[in-house]
Image (spheres, one colour):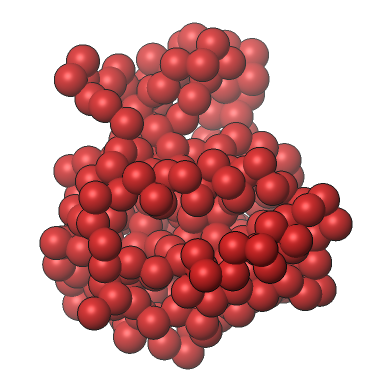
Length: 256
């Protein structure tokens, strides 16, 4: 039985795809499948997939409508009990992650994430409680696993150019009878993603999502956006102070 479907979306990032693949191949647990959706790459990614067609359980290289369209394609192809979106360049936070995910119970599973700083060192970014989902994503999307039957029929809506994962997660929460906060980091987040490159658009998308899905009023939306802008400014101008408040040192015994 396939317990975990790992969906990887890639476009012109063969090095990132191989890093993700190596992380998956290092897993001690065997009950997983790899779904790769390539947006018609021209850097050798499509050729590599064709030459290693036996590694993913399912793959496609074709033009698509962007990141969220590709994620929908991967979700449709998945057959595991839970689905984890791990994009090219993202890796798993250790060799036991998929086994621990498979042993967990819940319609939505989520845990902490690791981020690599400019000096190469890893820091632990703790997840917030899902009860604070009104504020925004409570952990990196790559640190969440959705029960496939729970999100059946849900789509990542491309009308949110950056915030579709937030809308998808809120809808998944509405359907989830059991949400499990995991006590271990799930992913090593690859910096430079869409949400980081287009942070202002992401905040606008989140406001739309809050108003449309949660009915959040204008004043509270404005307060949340102002708080997020302050945090972004602190991260940019006072990174050491930001890190002290948002990150935690790794346990000395932790190993990838």
